[in-house]
Length: 319
Image 1 (cartoon, rainbow, N blue to C red):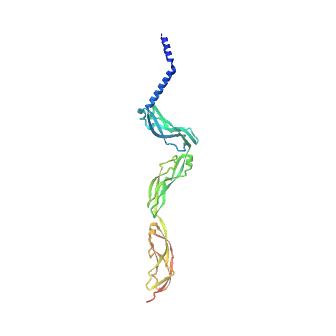
Image 2: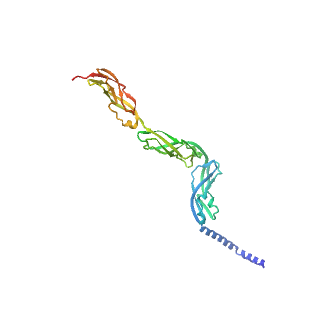
Image 3: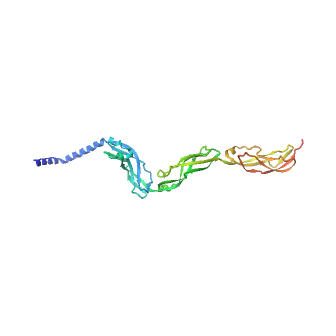
């Protein structure tokens, strides 16, 4: 009896079996679609890590972040911390410079482990990236200025620390860089020494500047020194007795002064800058007298002409 029942059950099972298999498949598909229809989605962006061989480094631009889609039960996907989903390119097998295409891969950790169901999508799916040999070298650092110091002053010297830094990056990028500059140092209106911290400008995002990336700039400002020549200045006769009179080929001279620009530009010479001391003359005759120069103490006399003047002295006619 038992054997008969078994045969009946088997006969019933294989009767119309294609339709029954199709029904089971449809049921499974409907179940899957139902599960998918009730799953939630979550979107966020995370950093893209580049995993390379120790001697290689990216040599072309690439997206620094990728868009990640989490799909699963709301109670499961929203507690996942963004830092527990890691996106990376696995390029560590390449040891030669060149251009490579690689898929963006996902690594789960922490709160993302053990979550089921969990679908993870990423955009973009793959990235084309150029690799080059990693190298480094020392380069000089120079300041860049804007504006001008106050009129009458000049930047006589400066000190910069550091004057050199180490840069690291792709070989072909490093080769083209001979030096770096700082951000602009504003000199506008400065009339005294000053010190300021300035950032060292990195011209290439694929280059790393070792150190703090900041330089200390110290400026040394002094009053500008100028030289001014003044011509056709009258030579004044001093100490001449009233009963005497003088004749000379010329009583004009010139001087050249050195001093602070602001003071020297505004200096107006007095009539007694150049003088002849006639106080020792008491009678008629021919005399050669030295020309005396009288200038403010803050100036330096670099040249004067004439050095001496020949004069003829006569008695004044009596009325």
